[in-house]
Amino acid sequence: MVQFGKNGGSWNMPDGRPYREPMFNLPQPIMVLGGLMVAIHVVREFFLSDVQAISVLATFAFIPAKAGDIWTFVTYAFLHGSWMHLILNLVWMAAFATVVLRRIGTARFAGFFVVSAVAGAGLHSLFHAGSVTPLVGVSAVLSGAMAASARFAFSGYGSWSDALQASHRQPCLSLQQLRNNKQAMAFLTVWLVLNLIFGVLSLGGGGSSIAWEAHLGGFVAGLFLFPYFDSFSQGPRKPSEPKPKKKDHPHIRVIK
Image 1 (cartoon, rainbow, N blue to C red):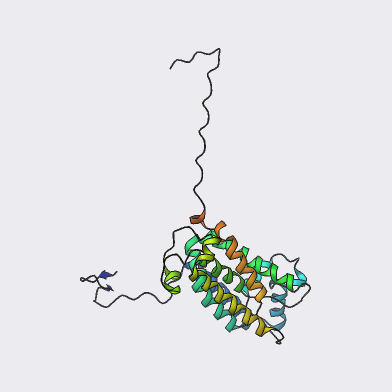
Image 2: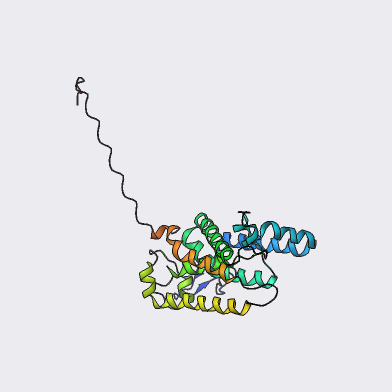
């Protein structure tokens, strides 16, 4: 229970102390999704032998040489290479996936998640055909969410943080409007430049590397396909035409 200050100030608790927003003010689906990823990583790290952990990767990570295992186009997004990799993605998910989910709802977000993951794995496989190196991480989906948010979050708001935290109910920007929106284009340009830098730095390095191709695949999917998931961007349905009335049978007299 809270009460508003007498002078129109901040919200106060019954004992007069100012009300504070909870630290984790995230939608339940995002919390569940993040918790599932953490649980999977905990099991892999602490409860499986090395052989079992490798078997999990071989079965659920996306491996271009085994692209026929179609479930891996999505399941790879639930696996992560390290705790740092997982934590960074959870922070990114809290920022961008939350915005998209609040806009389109849980069911549509699930579809968006699948499409972005598939697009990321698909583009990655084009650059690494025949590779046996596993691809893991939800970054492709989050890249898609970041691109999607740029299509509706930058219409008349101040800073980037204000835009991402606001309620958005207007139709998303068309591609032409997006090109003319300086704030949205700056937002997307920063992502593209950072992704390019990290991709170049990871080239030639041993061990794990940044899968920039998967990021780009998810980004493109989110940018171009988001309106198909967004009910606010879909025009109203045309009313159905009334059915024509049946004509009276010529040999039957109807009393009206």
